[in-house]
Length: 506
Image (cartoon, rainbow, N blue to C red; front, top):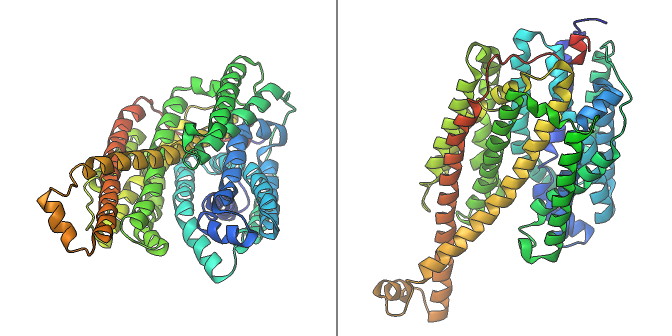
């Protein structure tokens, strides 16, 4: 078997792989801003429409850790091509859906077949690039990871406003077909070893129940008022039991469907921990800033998008340089720079005040982009560095799954923490509002009648409460980033990413 495989056209192969991954990552956020329109067109409540997001997230979370098993069974190239084609078909069906039930079903299928696409892209890029250029390949993929979620809501809003919501799904079809044809053609001669591994049915069932239930709890918890909801309590019990049985079974089974023994590798263990916690904090920022701009600062969704978009500028500009020169430095140092910058920008936001202007918000976003540029590629390289070549796809799938789950936890906890702290501050601030306080009387006297004045003052207090809570959450996020410097230095060099199965003859 050949020890080295290079596709006929490396640039074309990279475009095919990156396009498919961009399309898949874009779809995690593209439908978010279109939910009110979708709900109106299909005649359901806005609360029901959120299942369009949840169904994708649940099935995607279940499919990601199965990447290693599916790769062993079908081979990386074949699995990638078929997953991309099925994603295109599922997208077509989503756009043609005539009811909310149909749309949720097709979104679940879309999420499931999307699962292996990102990890296999990572593995294939490492295997087709020569060792000196593997950092560049991972940096390119990191750029896709950053830009696609930012572009999703902007593109989704524009398509929905100018055409109609089914087109946010239809645009995937030609992209998916093109990407799958390119990859199939370029990887035609790539040697792969497949096997027929025993299907671990207990592991599969407990994974589906445990992860599926957990993702539903995280997605729906805030809407259902957490454990005051019987549905959330029951789903949490299913998640806890399912995940405990899953962990015990997978760690003791001879041929587990998800290889948790990958955590025996030191760099994979600490690299994955850095990725999951770093991404969770990054995701919390990406979620909280637009919400705060719209709720507190009166921005429209378009202006909130424009204020947050500068985050993607420096990652795009710096990616070629990070990919080319990162290998000359200790990757732990680059990751530390990332955490310092992202921590510093979080502390900057903890000093934001109600009069902060657009330029200042956009500048801090731009500055954070410097941290993002040094985050993904070094951390991905570290976590993959001590895996065996035939473990790359499984390791990437497991790390991506945990990263996705980290993002879900961050979304729920950040929203919960922001609301709870705002409620607490509202209660504290209203203690000082009395008819006997001269400052209160002076403020309310210029606001019309007593009832109008009371409503106006309450709105002002609510706005201030959410602002104080926003500052507190960002102060906490700043310290989380700084603490991650300690975690990433627990990894040990060398940090060279090994080639995948084909390149090593496995």
